[in-house]
Image (cartoon, rainbow, N blue to C red; front, side):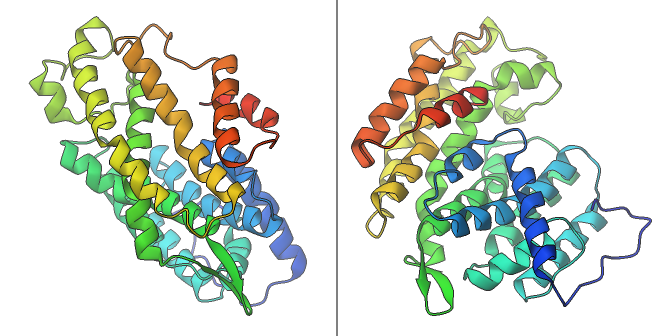
Length: 325
């Protein structure tokens, strides 16, 4: 159900039936699967269906509001309504939204902090006020909710273990969030770099405006040779922080199974490969040579699997990764 300022507020529904919850999980899975985002593709590798379904409900609740802010189909009132819906789900209530019953069921089964949704809300408020980033500091503040929060939720699910009636993380949430933050931001920056030509063509700019101005690019509407020096500085900044970010991420591996370690690294290593290829091509992101091809992705996944879970079949993931690497 989309927010409509002309409709009354969504009313909590205290009683859920099994069909309500099952249908909500189906709709949440469809939302999570839309456009086959990388997080969803990796989530398909969860060895247990319960964590996979939890991912779909949690990710759908975030994707729902992010899409509406991007599409300019909601406003601050709609954002407040979404916040209330998340709080209701966390307290055991549900709503009529597609993801509501599944989210309430997931919160009942998994001990999760509200912090990721609160930070995402702050980022969405920023997006409503001023799409784009005036400075790199603005970008980093936005990333706290827009990219670190989903990554922290995913990593927490990887660490979830059954404790009596509920699943709890083997590592405290605050530590998980701190450990994933560097890699999550780096992957988002690689995504921005990789998609720069397409985004600029469609009128979307995710590079800090003050940096573009300093490089004489503030009025540019396409990425071309004149961008090379700036793109080099942007890419090398990411590369400079990559090893510390990866070390932070690996600090979470202790309690993980081989499959969970594999999934953790699949989240980031496809992006690292993309960055490495851009650097090898002298920062050319406008000729489309920088897009990884299927054989390259296949070999990458074979190497990652050999380190963490030899023999695992990732052939289906190769096709999905290629669709939106």
